[in-house]
Length: 184
Image (cartoon, rainbow, N blue to C red; front, side):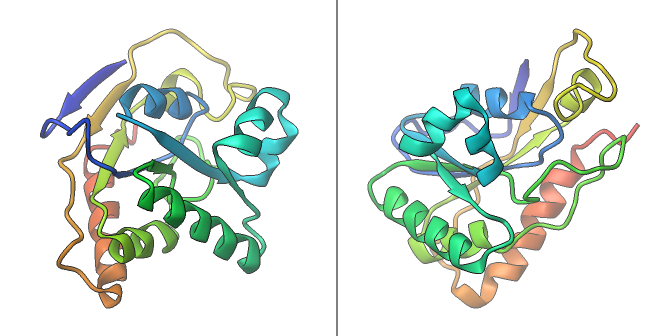
């Protein structure tokens, strides 16, 4: 993995890390990138994985993407964790795209509203080419060795934003992440 930082991250700052999602490698990449205490929000289907189930029952937050009540509860819990100084890692597309090569999909609103409500800076992360080495779980196109390139954009401050700015923030983060992606 090769990380390129636009600006150094603070070890003592709580962040919301927002990254594109094309590979199961993305989870490992974000674990290496994140500083301090952090947790993930992810799909409830991860509870079916015996290894990931341990984390999603204790540290991380599962969310049923089909249920508004589940999403509300998950974001409420994420907000509580942010208030305790625990950073959040989330893939705002909500899933790995079915297209190959992958194309960045529209973002869900949740992480941007959460960032504004709690005045937490967002770290946009462009994982540029992990899909070339292992798209999704590697079962369809196999895997191969290589160096994944990750561009870490500078933190985006949300302190001066209000909830009405969440769509604008979402679009800005989308454009930043997409600006560094390799679509070949």
